Image (cartoon, rainbow, N blue to C red; front, top):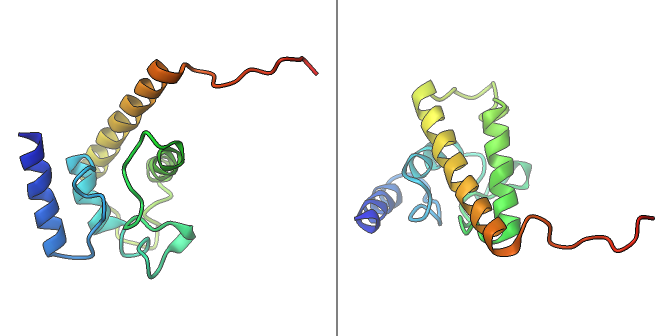
Length: 127
């Protein structure tokens, strides 16, 4: 059932504006929010801030990808994105996006901690 929902969202998103390469794996609210609010400035052409969301996967097992999505979450949660000069999203869409992204990031982090532990390496000396 989840696959059908994600596939439907992917089809809807690829038929309209610039598509996000990872729409099928993004949580539903994020799959709706990112293409309509973020891709205009953060695509392969504009790449503002060095961020191309059309090329950024949602494979949160990869630490680099996970860190990038945490940065996206932090900037949106702090109200830095979208910029004040752009149209602000309605509060419901913003809450949905942040809530689903937070849940996905927490789930991925919990899975990483369960498999690798909290600390990957320890210092052997105090100096």
